[in-house]
Amino acid sequence: MSPLAVILADTHIPRRARTLPEGLVAYLERADLILHGGDLIGPSVLEELSAYNVPVHAVRGNVDMPELDLPETLQLDFGGARIAMIHDSGRKEGRRKRLGKRFPEARVIVFGHSHIPFLEDESGLLLLNPGSPTDKRRQPEHTFALLRSEEGDVRAEIIAL
Image (cartoon, rainbow, N blue to C red; front, side, top):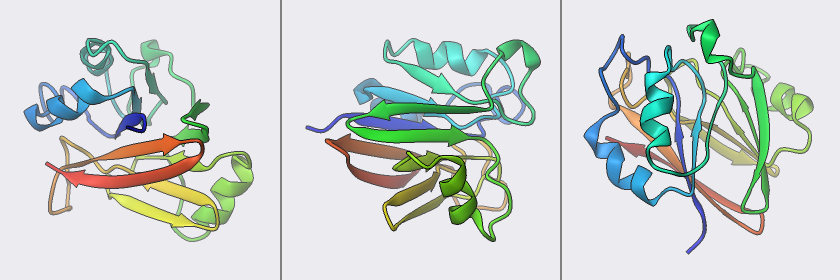
């Protein structure tokens, strides 16, 4: 079985929800890695995710408390693939070229901010916005994403709660 990463963003806890949705638990229990694309707001989400005893990485979103002391961007390796993270990917127009230039080594770029789930794998670069499991805004469903990578072979899917 290939390693599994659970990808979240824009949880906005405690403003939009008190805790993460119950529907996430089974995925978090199986995760080898948890990534959060920003807008956690406070430390409770990181504390909740840390209880699963797997590495948890997050980047700073535009509404995160300064005391969280999260990086603006982050890069790490997972299952042989390079993953980059940033909260705000900027405008939709030119996103792929802009992010590819900013993170030239990345196979996957995770971002959030818009709350709009997005998955596009083209030309060796997978762009992934998991949406939000707690604040769907104008989207039809609350969402998050799963990422599997083994020896650089990457597969992602967006899951509706």
